Amino acid sequence: MDRCKKIFIRPMKETDIELLLKNYAEQGWSKPREVLESYLARQNNNTLFMFVAEIADDVAGFVVLYEDSTVGPFANQKIPLLSDFIVFKKFQRQGIGNKIMDAAEEKAATLSDKIQLGVGVHEGYGAAWRIYVKRGYIPDGSGVWYRGSRLGEGEDCKNDDDLIMYFTKEL
Image (cartoon, rainbow, N blue to C red; front, side):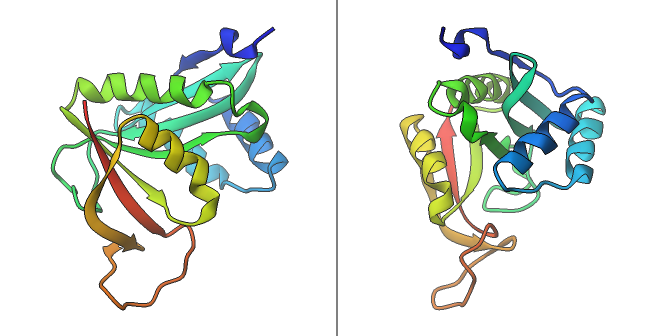
């Protein structure tokens, strides 16, 4: 049976934190508990939106939606920002990422006619690039950004998670 048929997209719950930490660890990644706790607190205070994919009492992935951003080319322009999008490897290639994105974009469309996201440029983000392009996101043209600032031509940087490129989509 296709597990994707039993997927639920919902807000984050406190019990998700342990599942998320476990799933990150299974992939050999880490995520500070404090970040996840902050997401939950901010969701509960209505300062961000969490879209969690649940399958068989497990968390398959999630995305965070901010009503606005404070960094990047669209800072403080009231354009919703998608952040921290992940579908854990054991759940990939089942359409879960698209379901999470559908829910986030639907909410964003109630806030603006455009949505933005920043994505790393190293090969670890290859799957994310593909899904974003297939969904109609295009580079915004501002170049690459490093640690919150536009990276000028010829400037040095490290190709890590802090080197990103911004994309937008009309909703």
